[in-house]
Image 1: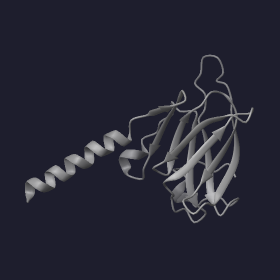
Image 2: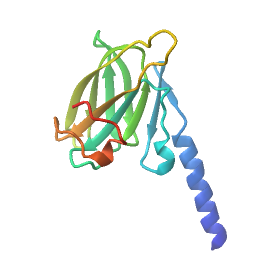
Image 3: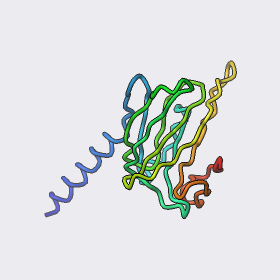
Length: 148
C-alpha cells in the first residue's frame, strides 16, 4: 500500500511537470497553470497574464479563450486548463474573449506596449471576471491590482 501511494505521488508530479511546460499554437507561446503553490511561480517572460475568476474571488478553469489582433485575425484559440493563462504575444492591441462552459462570455481589450530599449517589457495582467465588470476579490489577484 505504501508503494502505491508513492506511485500515485510520482504520477502526480509527472502530470504537474507536463502541465507546466509552455505550449505553442500558431507561433504564440502559452502556459496554463493551476492553483497549487508550484503553479504560482511568476512567469515574467510572458507579456500577458490572463486570470479567470468569479467576482467573489473563486478561480475558474477550463476556459475557452480566443485572442484576436487589431485586424480581427484570431491569433490564439485554446482552452486554459487552469485559472492563469500566460501568453507570449507581440506588442499590440488584442481582444480577449473567454467563454465559460455554460456559454457565458467576457470580452476585454488589452494593449501590450513594446519594451523600452535595454529593459524587459512589463507584464500586463488582465482579469476576466464573471459576472462581468466586477473586480475579483483579493484571493484571485495574486497580489496584482486588477485593471478593472
